[in-house]
Length: 194
Image 1 (tube, rainbow, N blue to C red):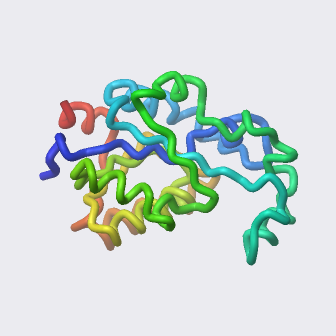
Image 2 (cartoon, helix red, strand yellow):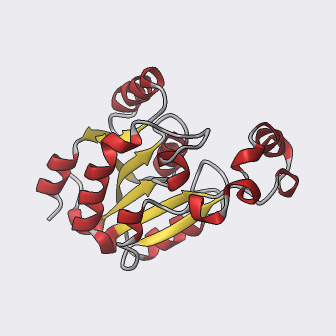
Image 3 (cartoon, rainbow, N blue to C red):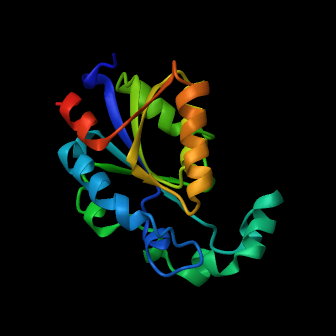
């Protein structure tokens, strides 16, 4: 069983640009935001919010990311505005003591900063919430597994734009990675993490 004292809540990309009326709107986010907020408010000093931060312009990135933002020019910061990149207001109110970690890609692990930060605190377990299950959460989870973290995924605090890939992702996480990933709920984690 995981040690609650070595646990952190990694809340992935609960941002205005996914909650509000944009081409990247995730309708489910409204259904999970209360559970995410309750967990974060219960453990604000142990919560890290990630933000997926688009470039100012598609010319600012390389490779397939440039192609990606050429397809989605309305989601660059130049078009969208910096305020839409922020986390949801009820979560922003928890910072500090919660912290915000910006990332320009799906995974929060690529440059090593988050892992170094967590290792300095001797963190061994990550409780993961947010969105999207089959994109940024998947990247966060797989990177965390590779780095040796024990993962608790909150089925009632994760969202996606696709029921099918959300369900398939949870099925893969819960079966193929059952020694490294546990599927749980907000209430069960709140009862355990005191």
